[in-house]
Length: 211
View 1: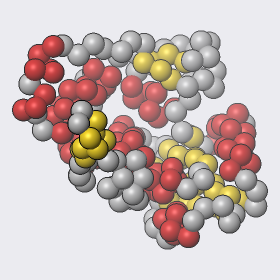
View 2: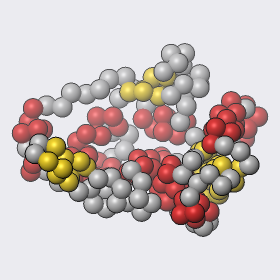
View 3: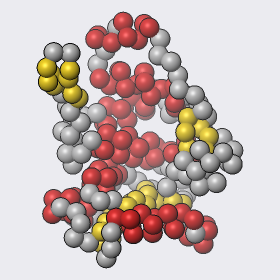
């Protein structure tokens, strides 16, 4: 699977390159070149598959062979280690609850998966990757929890002063190790602007591998 920049001015990248870089050379977001169509057989046996097996079949086309099957299945197993109950609201209407993870945010799923993929790809690199993120609460906590202890990856989180809940602030600031949280006197938009400015600053990106 190849990924292209939504700005349309950068060369295509594989899954590994897209994960490590985060943004294309033209500062555009990466998007898959195609969305694979699931075969009818998948839906016919869906009720017989485990959640990790469903996840594996869904994500595999986007990764190809860039992560070996046993490693990818282990990443998925660790990512989906908490429950995802399907709760019936009324006849023919149900909701999938995604807030049973470590930070009680739906973003736990994506953050844990990305952390493990990035950790795998960068495990033998001589250059540390820095994950730089702005948050108004949920994203930062999920990223901090997901990336905690991942070798060769450092996380820096910017959050607006007095604009996140007490619980969220503790999720950001009490983990230590490879997680750093910086309180910014300003709004979430100010934090986001600082992150964008860092990615555009070649002096920073030449010294730090940001994603």
